[in-house]
Image (cartoon, rainbow, N blue to C red; front, side):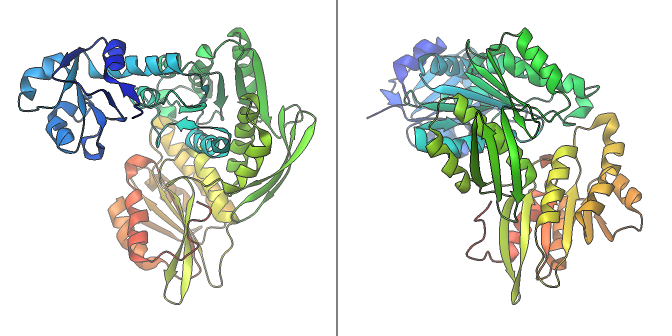
Length: 477
């Protein structure tokens, strides 16, 4: 049997103390007792709200082959009979195992950060590189102090490519994470007003994102957005850090991966890209101008990582956006249907603009309306009122026929819109879900967008639960 880790290698990597008869090895790693699979090792991490040690018995009942637990918590685990590796700090032990995974790996490692588009770019890399060899990538948005080491520790020795998303909402958070990942290449998708409440300005956000370049392996590359206002500073910083290959993507004439033509269609985009001395025609399977920008970065990263472009380029046509990040559903209602665009995972001014452009560019069926369902953009700090009010012009440009708003910060947008557009306001996501399930009609296009903490996923779920998906629903999601 092939193991992700042998128990002896785990003990050595984590400087742990074995308790009980350890199995020969484990097939996976979990930090959630509910999703433990048979053969997994369960790491009892203590988080902000829960302590994994409290769920150790559930993890064992669900098939965990091995527990990694804290020495201090061991006396309270007397009833748990599963074999254990005892360590001083479980999260740090996971990080140590991640570092061991990186040390043994021969994969080409690519790290992705940016104010928007991190997960989309990471998933696109996963999809287009999959035909070139085994790809290991972060699950969901595992991009923080526990998600990155977990993703590293899960990386099989056989992987040919490793794709890591690295996020932050404060200065200094990327530095230790990229120090573990040690990428051969990095992408900074763009610099925009995300988490602005924790920074004084965009320059500070650029400085924090630039931390990803501090641990790029010798001879490695960074890909920077040539169309972004912070490009010159990021390029200068990359030079100071000694990054060997500084490459750019965008529409700018000096971009190394340059967009020449772009045809935006309702469910896809057709683009021509100049890469070196070659012009390449690409069909991108998910719609949106922002997706095209991500595709340029992904194409560049695949090229610089040595992937076969004759395999990578056709794979872009199969690209699909993730749940909560542009997933499309065609849902039956009466004798007709309506289109749901699920952008409920996250929101900041840049991603709001991109989502409203998707709403604008999606064709209506006869009698249909463009309905924008927006929730608060979180972590905007002192800039929050101004940035929420600033969405009014974007809604006008999108041709919204009905605006549905929820959350305390969206009251500013209600005031800004006044009588210029039909507006429905509800205090909570639950109240918005109750309203919307009865408000939609055949022919409508409904775009739902908010920060994750507002809970607009339940608005999406309410629509999906009430209205059946049609056979081609989700094709370009």
